[in-house]
Length: 513
Ligand SMILES: CC(=O)SCCNC(=O)CCNC(=O)[C@H](O)C(C)(C)COP(=O)(O)OP(=O)(O)OC[C@H]1O[C@@H](n2cnc3c(N)ncnc32)[C@H](O)[C@@H]1OP(=O)(O)O
Ligand SMILES: CC(C)C(=O)C(=O)O
Image 1 (cartoon, helix red, strand yellow):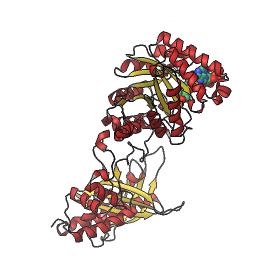
Image 2 (cartoon, helix red, strand yellow):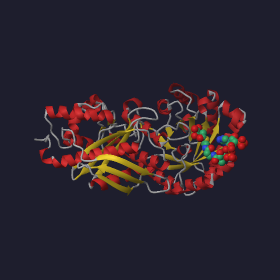
Image 3 (tube, helix red, strand yellow):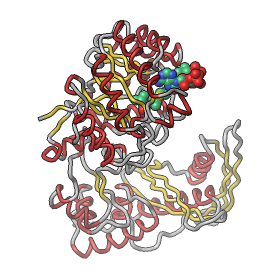
Image 4 (cartoon, helix red, strand yellow):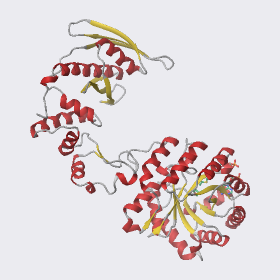
């Protein structure tokens, strides 16, 4: 099967994402992980950009043993010299020289005629090859370049001895049909085209980077360029993990493969996200938190019966442990029962129906129902919880340069008012510390969530907490237009439930009897 070479530019085009700035140590850490992932070639930076980038590229060049390390350069001798300097010590160095070829870039940016572009690129490739063993040449904005000029430029690069010629859709303008067609045209019209590798480099401005890259592969591209998590200039680049998994999952269709260690994908994605600070959206293909999570009852039922009903690839294949069945308001009885079994409960049909009803009520109010919520539900007494404590007053002091503190007064069953004051890491923590003192209870806050129940500035906030104490879990809810008050109410509600549950523990509804 045909091998597709993977050129990673997370450290160069990826770093061009607004707000991202990787230091040398971070670049080297990512480079090591890219090696583990089995990346064939990695672009470590643009050495002429700054002395810092030159040093970082040099550090990567020296650290990496199993991939080609590449430095980017304009078609200018000073940039090429910077790459020479930066790649000193690299096992397998390569320079990547680019020059824009489209009419828009020629006229407005470079202010060059076609012939000047051709000759500038030719001289740069020659100069590069004097000092470095391999040159990749990119026709920046090839996607908007006249096809006959693309052929002329690629022919020149082949004649000058470039190893790889890259055809970027720099501004993410093309459709898969058009982009694939450029590769087909080059293959059919460039003499000796087999002396070079053809490379695809796509941007995601119209959300077509992955589709365009796959179209290039179908039309003869030997190498694809992209970044981890698809980060990069503007809307980003082709996400390498998407290409790798598309080729893997649809091997019979593409008849091409990469030599990536697919089980390193998840780890690489997490590292890049952490070091760049670019959060991966939950619904991102392959590496998003929801990519292997199932929430709706019908899907969860299918997954429990046979995973291939709703999963075209396994989470294990990218290095994750397992799929997630997320319990929420769309979940059904099958998934609920399965989770109960995992938690150690075997319920009768009647018990299941009752617990499922309570679960759906809770799911209507909470985005995701956790195991602690379920345990709290199962262990909850069916009668109304008597109020041992009620919240009378609260007063919170917060300033960004002072320690938050809270004064709380609770009324107990005997009608006594207990006033306490405590500090905390934040306002809610201070309130909870004060309530703990007033109630004399010692509990663990195992879940806290807040949501707005209505819309607008005067929206009601609903706080949901789960408290645990010696193996008992209880949930509590509080609603108020003020989120601090809602937080206090939820906590007191849960404390009352806990005290009541403790009293009645021996008589509790035993679902396992
Ligand atoms: C599509 C891409 O992603 S390309 C990579 C983009 N990445 C970067 O630009 C990051 C690093 N860049 C930088 O740090 C700076 O832009 C530098 C150091 C490279 C250049 O800085 P400056 O000398 O101040 O130039 P500036 O960036 O303002 O302008 C670019 C100049 O390069 C020219 N230029 C642009 N591309 C090329 C090229 N491939 N080859 C030769 N010259 C080029 C422009 O025409 C312009 O020339 P001019 O000054 O004669 O008008
Ligand atoms: C330098 C080139 C390859 C580039 O990043 C682009 O055209 O998008």
